[in-house]
Every structure is written in structure tokens, then in C-alpha cells.
Amino acid sequence: MTRIFRILCLLGMTSLAALAATRPNIVIFLVDDMGVMDSSVPFLTDASGKPKAHPLNGWYRTPNMELLAKQGVRFSQFCAMSVCSPTRVSIMTGQNAARHHVTNWINPDANNGGPQGARDWDWKGLEKQDITLPRLLKQAGYRTIHIGKGHFGPNKTEGSDPRNIGFDVNIGGNSYGQPGSYYGQKNYGKGSKQAVPHLEKYHGSDVFLTEALTREANAQIDLSLAEKKPFFLYFAQYAVHSPFQANPRFAANYAKSDKPAAAKAYATLIESMDESLGLLLDHLEKTGESKNTLVFFLGDNGSDAPLGEAHEVGSAAPLRGKKGSHYEGGVRVPFIAAWAQADAANEHQKSLALSAGSVHSGLASVPDLFPTVLSLAGAASPSGHAVDGKDMRPLLLGADGETNAAFLMHYPHGPHRSNYWSSLRDSEWKVIYHYLPGEKGKRYQLFHLKNDPYEQQDLAEKDPATLKRMMEGLIATLEAHQAQYPRDKEGMELRPLLP
Image (cartoon, rainbow, N blue to C red; front, side, top):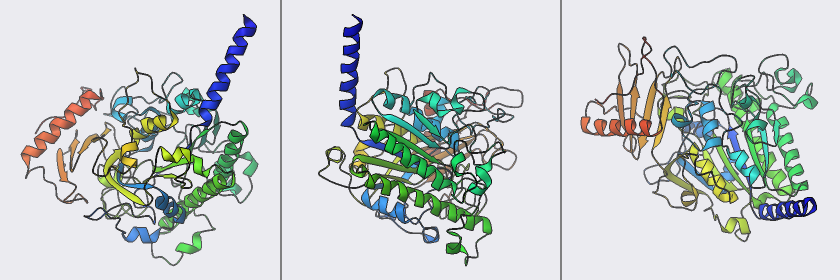
């Protein structure tokens, strides 16, 4: 019986390997704090749906993003959560933050829910028993690779090590959300809490952090190919999060600008990230895997470029707001889906024939990656696991005018750039609800984003009927997600009120 059982196991493993070999490699290239305007690629569109360049597109240099966009589909209205950990957990689970309850960035050392924040929010983040994208892909025969920033859980929890949530390999990931240093000469922050782990071979060198991580990513691709396994590479750049430390190799490109020094350093971080993307694409071509590899490029929240305050038009101009803000500049991020090298004859690409250089104007958001990647990998989520995201393949295949869903953003925390708020995007309308409006603040804000994409005309008082309809939708959506709510000073739960 033992010998027969071993033979059956070997046959099963062989079948799994054969099945996995027919599936594409998948890369999620996630950039920290990169907003929709932090690129030379124009993502915003004009009234006809054509890409429209704005001044910030002329400031940044991202030629490899330009190449990727020419090869695939970019989205003009792709949304992420307004801060990082909620987005990252949404990618891993396919759930909106209101459902998975990681509704704030995770402080590695102390619960940072806020003095009136949701009492039982999931500060501990992801755990071993959670259903996650890498775990499901691993079960489907993929080699799962984590490179860069983790930030899935605080210190001394299971989520602090990405290997506990389904990754075969972790290089660079821990509980901290920013690097101690981008410089190899500074050992990437060794000696500080924010030290980037697993990069000792580069200590004392002039290798910038983005390049060190890229070298490690490419080495892991090689190991996957040696094992004859398709790979899932989750490449989570620490760039372009603070500290805003300039990469000296690119500093001359911005030296003559009159922008602040921190903004110039930020621009070099953007260019370093773009170089990393190019090195990855080059390596995929060198190994012969570029035609078999689908790349999803995106940011994790709105821009944090040092070009203005939280609610101003500056960092994401012409959009209003930045990282942490309740305006579009806080949640709109770049998104590109492209084969690393287009080839209509490739078997993988026949099933997802992307229209090169196209722009999709429909609404989509980070939970959508989970079902999309699983469908491409021929895998599925367990029936008992709630998934808020929707498969993006119809949108990626050119079904412009379609939208995946309304977008719910829920932040029952403070103090931050925007405190204790929820918002709902539903087609052209957006409502924002403030749980603690304050003496001079407003409880409701209402914008028609087709007519007013830059959120300059609050219609809450002028259009009470639409405000009520949108608030009814927001309340129903929060309840459907089993959302948690902030509290008053006596500790009682605050739920949104109809106008």
C-alpha cells in the first residue's frame, strides 16, 4: 500500500506540474505611495476618453512605464485604499478594507486605531489561516515570490513574515512600511527599526535599494524556471515612500528645477522605480519568459509627493488631495496590465488578447486583482471566502464603458490627513461622509465627477435628492461589508446618518 500510495502521489505531482506549466507567469509590480500623476504616462483622459497630459506628466521620467502602457491597457479610474496596509490586504484577499477590517496602515509597534477609531479593527493583519492569493496560487502549482515591502502585520505576529501567508520566498519584507535608508552605503537602515532585511550582500555598496531588490527578483525568477514552475512575483517596491533620499544617478535630471529639494529627490525615486521595471522586463526577455508573463503595475494609494498639503491641488494636480485624503488624489492610482512582450500567437496571450496602447475609463479597484489573477491561473477561491473584487478580464479585453463595481473607501480612524470618514463612488457620483465633522467642517460632500473631476463644486446642499440616494447607497454598502465604525467620546459606535 505504501508503494502504491507513493506512486499515486508522484503521478499527482506530475499532473500538477504539467498543468501549471500551461499557465502564465504573473507579476504584480506594486509601487508604494505612487499616485496617478507620478509618471510621464498620462492616465487622466479628456472628454472623449483620450489620454491627456498635464504638467506633472512632463516633470517625471518613466520611459519603461511608457513602454508597458504601449503594450497593454491602462486605466484612468483605478482606485486603491487611501493608505497602504488596507490596499495590500485587499490584493491578498480580494476584499474591500471595510470587510477585512484592516482599515488603517499598521503601526508595527502599537495599535494605531486612533482615540475614537473602530474598536476591533484588525490591527494584527493577516494570519496563517487566512485565504490569500499567494496561498491559492501555491496550491495551484505556482512558485510564489515576495520581494520588497510587506506590512501585512505588526511585529511578532504571523503577518510580519510574508512566508506565513502563502509565499515560498520572502526577500525584504517585514512589519515596517518604509525603509531605513535607500542607500547601500547605509546598509539600507541597518541598526534602525526600519532596516530592510535579507540584503546583506549589498551592504556597503553603491547599489540603490530599488536595484538591489530587482536583482533579487530576477534571481528568484531564474530559480523558478530551474524548478520548471510558473511564478507569481509580488514585487512591492519600498519606493517611492519616504525618506525622500535622492538617487545620485538621476539627480542631474531635476537639478535645474525650482521645485523643493524633497520633490526633486522624490522624482529620482520615481525614475529609480521605473529603471527597476525596465530591468525586470529585460530579464524576462533574456530568459525567454516575457511572452508568457503578464504584468500588473499599480500604486498602493494616492501620491505622497512633497508638492502640497493633504487636501490641496498639488501632489496629484489637477486632481485634488494626496495620500490619506478623502479626495480623488488620495485614492486614484496608476494601473497598467500588459504582457511583458506582446505576441498574438502565444497560447497564453490568445486567452487574454490585450489591445495595445488602449485606455479604459471604467471604474475598477484593488480587490479586483484577486479574482482576475486566480482566473488567469486556472485557480479559484474557496466558496466560503467572500470576494468583493470582480474579474477584470472583460475590461482588459476592451469592454470600455463597463465598470466593475462601485468603490467604497472606509477609514474609521484618526488622527490622519482625513479623519473618520467613508466615501462611495457610484458611476459619475461620489459622496463623502464625515463621522466627526467638527465645528466648521461638513458632514456631507457630494461631487459629480464627470462634470467636476477635480472636486471643486460640492453639490451636497444644491442636490439633496442625489445626496440622499448616495447616502442610502453608502449605508447599505457599509452594512453589506459588515463594516466597523468609529466611536464618540463615550465609546458608543457612530453610524452614518441620512441627511
